[in-house]
Image 1 (tube, rainbow, N blue to C red):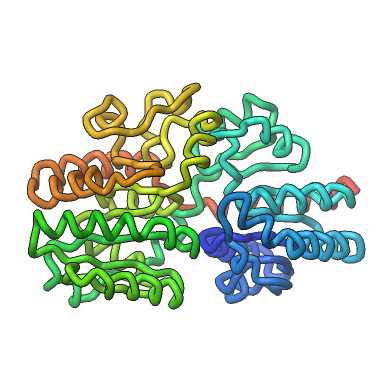
Image 2: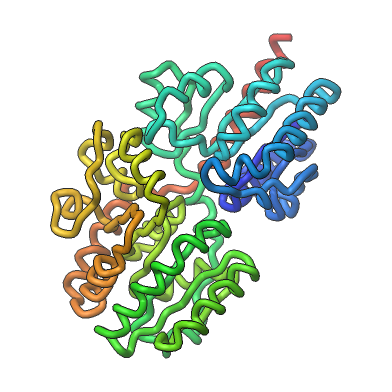
Length: 397
């Protein structure tokens, strides 16, 4: 069996690698090729192009790389025409993967979307593309499964792929024990995320340190160049003490910290798994803020908060504010901002650092939700379905 993958996000690279391992465990002759990253290559995928180097945000980044995207789409189409793979597996990265799906269907290649785009969150008209361009969508969220099925999408609930990865996370070593209290700072895996978010993280760190002087900060960097950017900003902020940057050690930071400040994303599920109280921040432009206000239909931007919401959708979303009804319902305070809300972030973290009862209450809520939704095995279930579909296709041909 020959499977073509198209994966553009660092987190998707991890999910793709797990799926490839599970497929090869069931059928060792499975041949995996396509676009992905280093994790997928290590799992045995023949990477035609490292698409994770083009992990971008918003339309500006897409336009800058438009020629490259079209070249890659043409390359994929030529592969579909000449090699006739048995399946195409897409992971998130919708702007590009819609085109890959369309070109695969042109040649009759079955398309599977593993970790699909969150079309339920905003611009819900995109569900038509999922319905028309995929043979099966693997959903990781119960409310997402119901939403897609109601709109005619062929969907299977397999659980979220992030929970497959958490069981492999290394444990923190003894070096963290002397750094108390410890706050984890997670500014994102994409360069643009770090550039936009870390200056606000830094402002919040100053305010936290002023109120809790013994605090230590462990800052996660996905790439060495991200670490260099962060170190340069820290050097300019000479009033920040006890702050250290670590490359590729996010799981250890999460486990060792009392609490965290993080960008929004699937990392929130990792934070859930480790029962880690967290404040979510995501900085966007003023224009982007107004666009999301007009078009976003999900009640929260954080998956963990959507999982506990009594109603995950609504027509308009006011700004999340401390003390509001949303703040009482949500587990993670979340701030999608175009202005400085570092005071709010610092307020939440300081409360957890100075009130054991407040911190434990948040941990208990996370523990209860984890028991309900954090089951591993998504990659294995998806692999079984893809291979079973292929077997039925052979029998019927």
